[in-house]
Length: 247
Image (cartoon, rainbow, N blue to C red; front, top):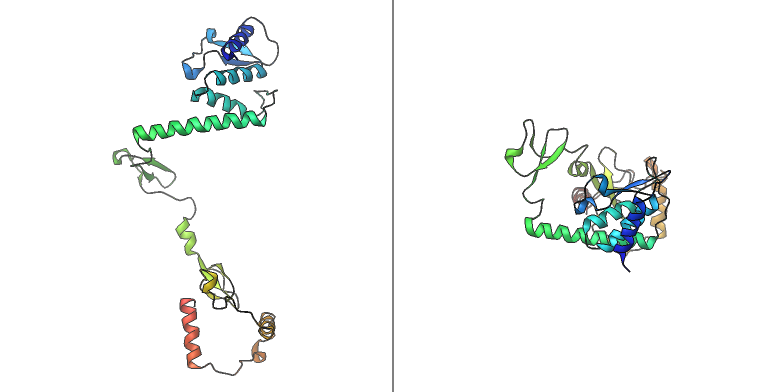
């Protein structure tokens, strides 16, 4: 199919008529190909014709990134007060142009990095305690700015310091340091299920009953089976070691 002939016919028809109502201005020779804003290079089209014109240009120059990008942007234009889109874009068309645009953009980026190196190499952050920006040379640091980066709010490292790991013999979870550790939980973490001393073990019905009664507060005070009893020295050492190292 001769897309160039169809495009020329569309442009000629647009030049030789007077449109009434909503119109859009189209650059006959696209700006990305050296087209100007002169009246000779402009033509009034309907919204649907404008879409068809860019679609034809995309078919004529399928590897020109500026042409493909212009059509891709047109596909993503939403209805507004200044623009009225009265055409429907099919999902196949949308996907096709998106893939072409992404492929060309990726190729251009790789070529740029190959010729000029990564634009991120050698850069560093500076801040004036209000905003941050990147520079490539220390001589480019303006007055009142310094090296570093100001985080809006708390940094990830600061947020991490506000939490500790706690475990209850079954699972481990994060806990905020400002809140008291719940009853039955201690500091520590099970990195893997196998780290849990109770991994693979089945809790007896009697133990489950005791645990339930403890949660309900039925073992408070003198009702506690350990009330008035002392732990062995060996048991005390184990408890201290568990609280300190989490195991």
